Length: 124
Length: 109
Image 1 (cartoon, rainbow over the protein chains, first blue to last red):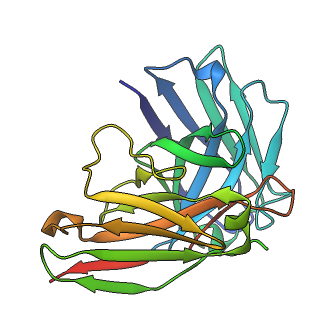
Image 2: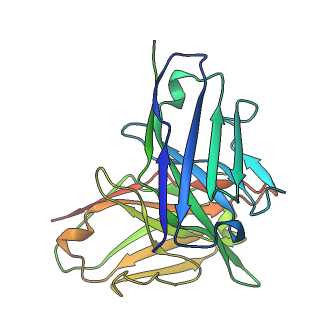
């Protein structure tokens, strides 16, 4: 059974830092790209960042570029998100999600498994 | 363009059919995926690709696409289908970004 378990959330002051982790099990972690997606309280989903299976390709949403760093340790089956210079608008539940691609001519990129999320609150 | 547009709210009578739409330029290049999210829970993938359902998703859920519009159809809506639904696609600008629609709150009457 595929499982993704996030941890590391909590209360942090504006300008502070936090490191989120996502522990993966039930699949060959090193074969899949992974993502972080967040959801502010009462708001919609926002894609944050993605990392390829070997960490060769990394992408960020404009809203976090330069402040957040995604990384992974395939030996530990773990995904990370280092969040620096945190702002109040970064307050959200952060989900890790497994990445898939489907199709040949027209592709579908989708997230087939999600963790339960970890809450990050940025407040003084 | 990096935007996907959804109607904020849709309602359907129990047992009837409802269509939830998602519009955006990226949908001319990539298929949408659809996610169901119930209060306090993580999103769940319900449709991906042209019209593919993951294992465990009822066949009353179906997807379609035309031009810049993707649709999620629930045929014979059930009370348990009341949830928020989000579409997602890869951005077509070449930046390898992903974009979500704003979400549609489905109410089953």
